[in-house]
Image 1 (cartoon, one colour):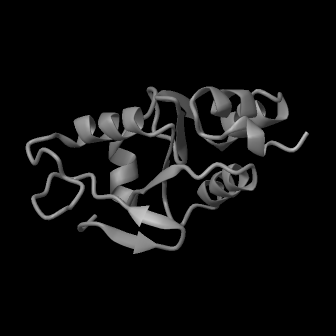
Image 2 (image 1 turned 90 degrees about the vertical axis):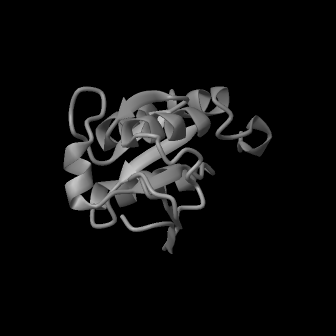
Length: 132
């Protein structure tokens, strides 16, 4: 990735070490440390590929319930070099700093009625906006 750029639906963050990115706090920070920091600083994070239909479905599902995750768009070569929870997964979802997994895991949480409570717990959504 080259710098910080806008894409349809969000901002694309650069994960490689740079001095030109406005999000670079520590230019000596490794890619792994930057990923860990992004995961810990944001309640919901998706590591995604723009060409992946499962990534689109995951973002759409979260958006439909009022959650706007931090989306990190990765290039094909970057996604294969990053391992999430022991396996390379795309999309990879983190809620409250914990790896949830891919789209199957998100859908399972949603169908078991455990997704909304988890999102409320980490502050990704507020209960007063829920339709009861």
